[in-house]
Image (cartoon, rainbow, N blue to C red; front, side):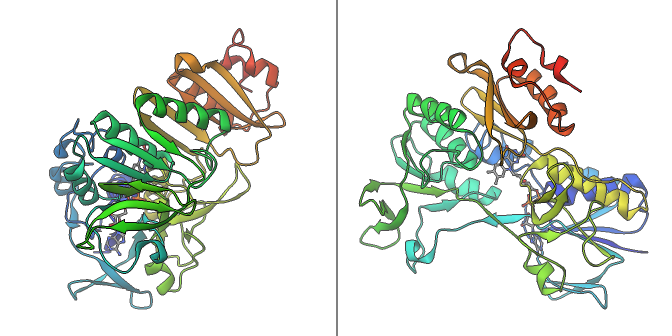
Length: 410
Ligand code: FAD
């Protein structure tokens, strides 16, 4: 009965399971997750869910009945410990083994943690990372008005946390090691805009601050302050670190698959073993659009690549090379980003920063590499086409509000 086994039930794994059934996989489908919860959306964990605006049942990806109806066996609370490629078996944490005809790795990633030199050896109760629903629930229980929260890392997740915590009445400080927030992903003008909005909302943003260690209370179980290499000390009742992601590739590398900061896959999501596919945050692939290997951390990437896996599993050809995009919600600001901006040599703005509605286009020469759009959904749709087509535009036309973006499409 040619079983399909999917390891990991995040956005990618779940999408593979239902899309494979739709695409015609008629054998058994087993979806395995080490998490105990019914698979859920991760983006709300740093947005509406943590803010208490949405209930837990609204963050589930699909109701249990969908899996039942599609004949997908969901094994929750089970970790896949190893893969025996010769025998086509996976070993589960409970000791059992399952045979596969085809295997899909959708293992995602885990938060990068602060180095042990910073942490010290012991466990503390008020230091958090945010990846899972359990993490979000732990943080939520400590989001108490009046408390001091230190966020380590001024990336999207860190800033989303800062926005919701300050709104909830906490005193929030963001510590960023670089000279500005969002330095890795946006132009100065966009990073500065976000820093200004946060400061106006009451968040303290400290840049060029490298966390060096923590001061603990007398029990040793709670952080009372965060120490930076500058010598500055930031008092804290809770600390949340959002300092990046490490892809979960250990299972793949132990099985001898090719791995390089991501399980390497081709445009059909095939790994170096023809019986094994991979998708989502755990993968790295060659982007035709950018002519280099990339690893993305976004829901659209997980979903699109999963659909390619499903097609491949059913003998159909569906090349994956879609345009990367991502979103972030902070306060009333809906940021949507498309493309990868690295290598840009100029930034063109449309719209008005003071009206909190603008787009920043990243160009190399005349080519549109990427765009950040803030409260400008129509711009985003056109920007996606410009980026996807590697369109070349006249920068002065792009900057000219009298010229419609649509007129710049090739
Ligand atoms: P994951 O969602 O990480 O799922 C992998 C699953 O596999 C996990 O449940 C893991 O426990 C399980 N697993 C791993 N190893 C094993 C094993 N050996 N056995 C069994 N199970 C295993 N993206 C956006 O596009 N927009 C956003 O606004 C956005 N906001 C985010 C906010 C937060 C707080 C976080 C954490 C992420 C956000 N992301 C956002 C990123 C997005 O959530 C990820 O890109 C997406 O979840 C990737 O899906 P995935 O299925 O590849 O991996």
